[in-house]
Image 1 (tube, rainbow, N blue to C red):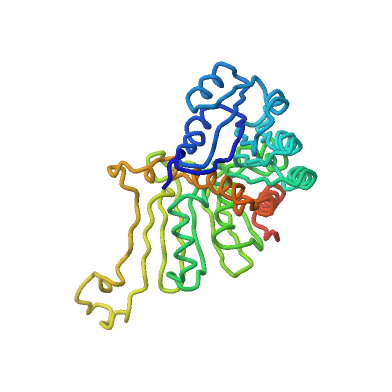
Image 2: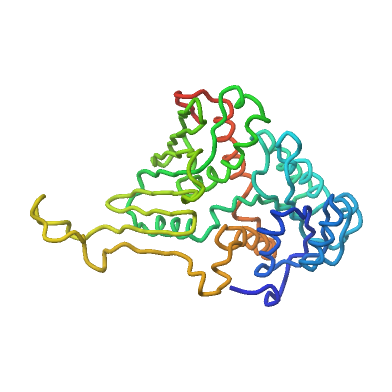
Length: 359
């Protein structure tokens, strides 16, 4: 892993937003990414100035309009701001301005509230011939990247199904009919993006919801034949792993706990020749077929164990910067991907429970 000072070329960026999420999760990624933080802005001047000093921004502006009017030698803008008073992301309007100013743009997820909003991004990109990326961070988390690598290497054989647990409440039918009612469910877009990256485009879905708690199950079918379910486990203990993904193949499966710990249960060669009730031991297979474990070792004191790496934010930011520095379009978090993600979100938004919904 390279440190910021080791990169021969850096992307000159401005950063809009200096809230706690930025300070905790995104701005620290610049220690390991080819980023030169030229300017920052935040509506809270005291907080924004403190963040600018903390992360080495050369200039601070009281609002983004002043920043865009004054700065002349920027390559890109990163935008990380909270939603409006209705809980709706403000990225479409802000990104339209930064793209309109001729700057490549990265925004945090969720990018918007419906697939219709993606056209705002697309039109702005096409008008000024600039690129945009969305920080769907889960697909960049090392454990999920390793899961994708194992799938690609055929370590599980043909993947057939998956089950995921995610602590989120599914809004009831009246709430799902409005953007405001669906706003608390927008974090689910990160799950949709992860499943899309692992298993391909979605074909359809169905929903089942607990009428009292809002706990739910969403079943998915993908065009490549994989089926899966997401258990919306609202009400689970805060002390339990917050999310869990199990992927099942042909005689093998893998589990990702809390987005950081991965166990791959490999095929057991030869099977067990002893009939039921006659087996000599409980350990199946030899060392070449035993489960494989990957988990962070905090005592190693390595950047790779830092939260900004494990969460996926570092690789999301680094991928965006490295693509632009190479003169290429971003490869991840693209507007095509955003359109797929938000189309699935729209189907949940508009769909009825216990009915099959085609995507």
